Image (cartoon, rainbow, N blue to C red; front, top):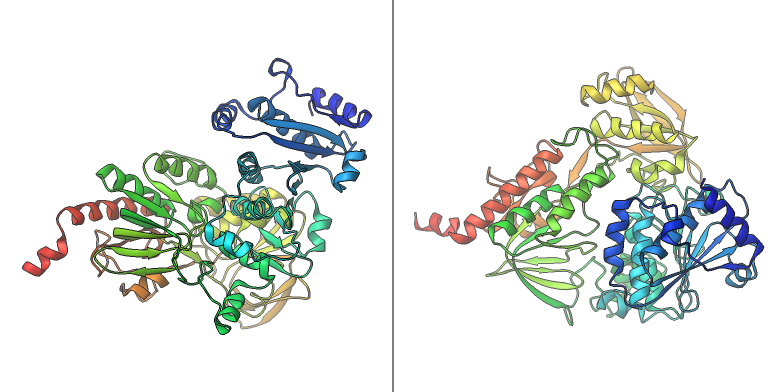
Length: 579
């Protein structure tokens, strides 16, 4: 720990408040130089002041406290608009604000009730930076549909989002809560909690998977939600589908825009574009680059966040040019390149698609009129489909080691599967300090030899020739029931968590609804140019099946974009009719 910040911790305890920021010459930087340069540029446009109050305890060995103080001090030096104030946990100000945990960081507490409980390590820092921009602008950034729903709120809400440093989905969920607190400061307070730093608080709410959103003491949601869905569940304190069904039964469904139905398009923006890409994974991003460079105006939509499955891949070792790179870092490289050309809109799912002279695509916020559409919708995790799996999802059952691994440090978990994903997850969990056992239904792995060698080197045990028959537990996972695939015998094995990595299911439902032909496994059927059976509709990436690798997704995305360009210049389907 820096001696400079040890002194300041002591000073903060002696005095009630410390607001003085160290000068750059005397400052020991926490943020790397490259990051400082980038932040300084983006912070130059902050329109208003942002007060960040930092509350820390008196333990000089608390590295989270040290990080929080240093991080905010760095930001204050990079942006004159950021006004830091440092307080002790036993100060009068801490009592006034109701702060009891260390570290806690508050944003403009005289205007809003927005707090980060825990140091904004890892991915949480993204939400922290976004909060600075939103608070500075004094605007929520919510869509009109979300604002309309939130205007119906008539009681106090205090959404608490639990996250972890390795969860790429968590910042967007935290941002949902923060936006609501800015839009309705009279009724909404937002809290983003680092679940890893506060295990007792996490245990109190049964956090087993992140993002975990506690809307109130009794209602919770697991996973990243589209903005409109988050607002519906915040207001209604019930599942969005249930809320929509109730309103429809009463004749009150009026297009709330939760991403669950088309609804009304009144007041939404209409955008014309040449190519609309559905999905911002490697295939969608590469397609955007190639399409724009070919002269096609391109918009990319994703119902979640940019990157797809790569975002939650701990380490990528087989992408040309990168011998060893974290999945999230590779996504940053790809998305940064794509953003130089195309518009990318995250957290915007598609409600409806209509074929016509222009392909009409409806989202909760926009209507897009496109000359062509590319499905790069990827695939979702395949489930075990056994008793207990759904019941214990978020309570010990997980499909994302990057997201939830931190929760299980020092505990015993099973990784189910035998491919690259399963072995990569097992190695990642072991690196986090989790006791891991791999369960595989065969007597050999199908994963790359390099991963198998790493598993052996790490001494990770494997239960061969076994399938999970049931996930067992009470309020959370306690173990699994295994069946030997050779003898048929069953046995119960205790585990605190189960990470499922048994493959993927293509996200092809909307394509099928449009009339696109599918393969027997549900993947979209394409020719070698990535054309589907419907003119001006293309597909690429994991949704077309085959070898699901990052490099093949990138290649198919580029191919699809070039096919779209060629067809829009000289329509292939018109040639076919005249032949």
